[in-house]
Amino acid sequence: MGKNTFISLLPAIICLLIFTSLLPENALSANLSISPTRVFFDGQRKIDILTLKNASEEELTLQLRAYKWEQDKEVKNVYSPTKDIIFFPKIFRIPQGEERLVRIGTKIPPGKHEKTYRLYIEEVPAPRSVETTAVRILLRIGVPIFISPLKTEAKAVIEKAALIKGRLLFTLKNQGNSHFIIKTVKVKGTDAEGKETFNTEIGGWYLLGGNSKVFTVDLPADNCPNTKTLNIDINTDKLSLNEKLDISTEMCAP
Image 1 (tube, rainbow, N blue to C red):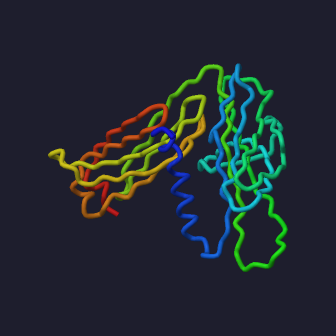
Image 2: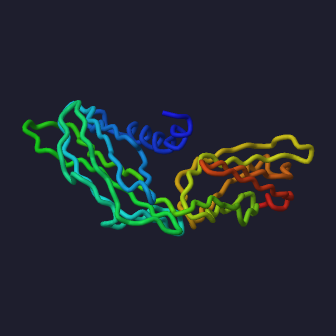
Image 3: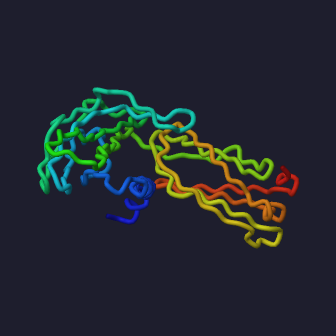
């Protein structure tokens, strides 16, 4: 796995680790590897193959469902059933240690804007022949699918940056026609002499084309009055942005 691939998957890995740490000690869950982790279609490429490998200690029964993927005004994911994505098989079994190939395709031609979907791979609960007190955690993984635009335009801007009562607010707007992955959002404060007063970093995720995400950062109360400049640095998998904001002590007052 390349460095960029690892960074793009980092938020998902962190969420998985947190989720796993909260499971009861007697919880059981499936172990499934999927390759590739993202699928891209364009005018020339309209078919791909997913390789699913069952690394669990038992046979898995899986079913597939395709959804159109959008984001609302709060950048929350919104899914709706779709027939734009074709896949086979739709339900199948994978014995322990074996692989299964899933064919994915689409008849949707590329347009001016990227089209986004997710193919969800869901575990079907198997009947238990022996009673057990273990809790079964069913597998559910969404593989992103993108139909690339005819011509990709990567464009973004930081808007409405302001410090109000010690809280920094700013908006990242994806002005392009395709998604990008927000890798890091860094905010650094410096005093009148250019000395660093504080530094913080925020993780990110997907931001689909045409959407905006609002960020908030609370400045430390003891450092804010000494801070004269805020630097916002955003790094994505397609472009980087920077915004500089001069502030005054009055902006730190509650």
